[in-house]
Image 1 (tube, rainbow, N blue to C red):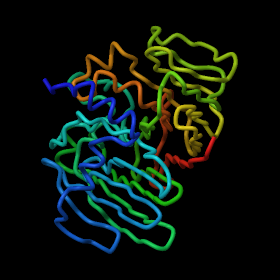
Image 2 (image 1 turned 180 degrees about the vertical axis):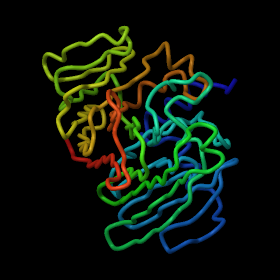
Image 3 (image 1 turned 45 degrees about the horizontal axis):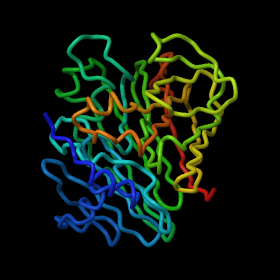
Image 4 (image 1 turned 90 degrees about the horizontal axis):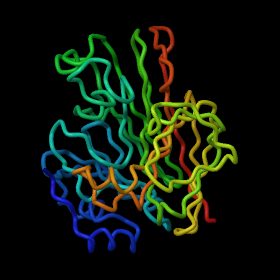
Amino acid sequence: MISKSDFGRSFFCLKIKDCVMIKKIFALPVIEQITAALSRRQLDELDVIVVDHPQVKASFALQGAHLLSWKPTGEEEVLWLSNNTPFKTGVAIRGGVPICWPWFGPAAQQGLPAHGFARNLPWKLKSHEENANGVALTFELSHSEATKKYWPHDFRLLAHFKVGKTCEMELEAHGDFETTSALHTYFNVGDIAEVKVSGLGDRYIDKVNDAKEGVLSDGIQTFPDRTDRVYLNPQTCSVIADAALKRKIDVEHRNHLNVVGWNPGPALSISMGDMPDDGYKTFVCVETAYATAPQKTTAEKPSRLTQIVRVAKD
């Protein structure tokens, strides 16, 4: 069992708003200086790509093409990363932006990993470029003997990122198959009790309440306890109003069917070994998803899933 962090560490993270784990990543020794703004480092068993640019600081794990952190210059950390998450081969990372693919949620077949295998396998850094505004990176995962253990299809999956004052993410799949997927983004907030999310639409499936359908009557989602909802007719932009940090985060969704809102609440947070007991207080997940019906990919038409994030002062 992964040990829990003590209250002091969680309070420290809450007060200064950026997590200890992110600071640890940026303090790692450089193994390879790829460009002036990009370096490769290693945290425990995993390779990490660090972006240190005048406009932005960000980091990625090659496992899962996993965006771990994104901080535009002059802003607080935008993403939340658990101080307790392991950086071990084949183990999912808690926080940042996990890529859930080729299925979202529990696997249909017993014994397969929840949220697919893409987040648990090593990707390749296929390309990168930088300019005065930030850095663009593309990661690639293709079918292999490892993927055929989970899924029979041939595929090529690209994860495109542009990090600067905004953060643009796009998942691009090539092949002939159907999938469900999500960009499972964990957003750093000052206090979940003071967070309101709008732009989610009215109808949702409540996964905490036996997957019953509900209606968000006032258009505002709050998080008084465990919340796990798949919104069925979301607007193209969700807005996270964070009173404690005095900012708003605009989350634009493209090529999606759903938006998912999630926070584990106190009881589930305590039970999760890769999360501090009070970790739920400082994040909210607003996820760009294709969850309630399959998304079709054909040889003629790749499938895409896109999220664009911007920070605004409240």
